[in-house]
Length: 146
Image (cartoon, rainbow, N blue to C red; front, top):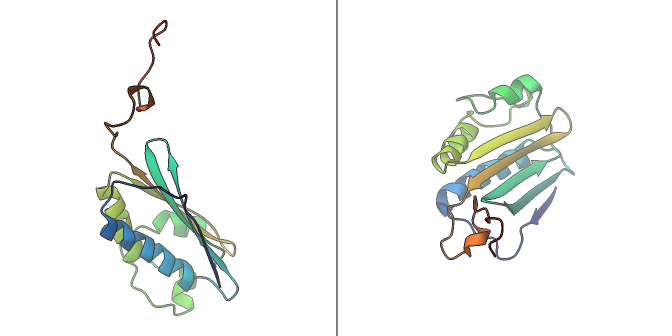
């Protein structure tokens, strides 16, 4: 298995590191569990305007559209996971979603059976008061003013 990461130097976020660490740990654990030998798992983080984003992507077994719709439901386990006897009780994604929700963030899933899954977390960041006014979210310069 190949594990790769791409996180820009200096990227920071106003989060509960233990709880978001738990989310990333769960997503990584799932990516590894549901991937076959030779698969790739990649963790990427970036700043997207007023948010910090984290993506965990794998080239594992993937999920159908119906499974994706239910993935964050309590005790949900994909058919392929149940058939292959991969251990788990179906709470990890529910707990992860609750943690991300508590940060006023979002977690989304894109997957294709046989091709893998990508989970993306978006965490809004508070406006920094030390930013120059013209760099703050929602600031609009008035015409004729510099």
